[in-house]
Structure formats: C-alpha cells, structure tokens
Image (cartoon, rainbow, N blue to C red; front, side, top):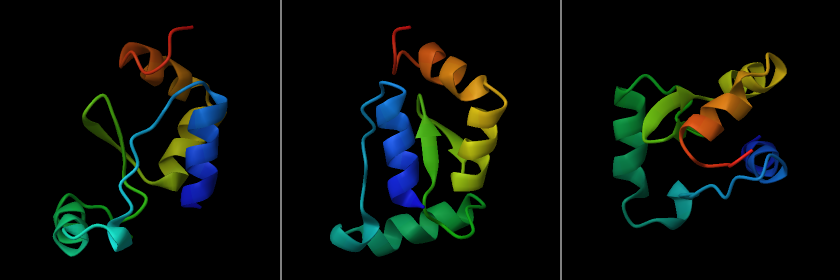
Length: 80
C-alpha cells in the first residue's frame, strides 16, 4: 500500500519526503516512535505539513471525500 499512497501524492502534484524504515539506520527507533503515536501498523504513517494525518486507509478516505487536496494546499505541498 505504501507504493499506492506515494503514487497518489505524485498524481496530486506533491513531492513527498519518504523515509523507508527498513533502509534507515534509525528505522527501528522510528517505527517504535510511530507505534507510540498510535500508528498500528506503523507504516505508512503519513504526515502533511508536519502533522500526523494517518495511515493508508485514512489517506484514501481523505482523497475520496475530497479533503486530501485541500490539506496538501494548506500545507503548501501543492499550489492549485
């Protein structure tokens, strides 16, 4: 599902910063921190404008109801 979420952001015109936890030397620590924030499963954990938004399911729901694009615009991640 991570690939689908990345692709959705690209299609909306955003350039997401992606941290692949299994390729990061601090990946295990980041995973535990995400779990501590209530992310279960811990990935993908999506942040927009520095704020935790949710998991894949949450992002898809925001996209379906039309509010994802506005969140990205408010965070200045996209311009239109």
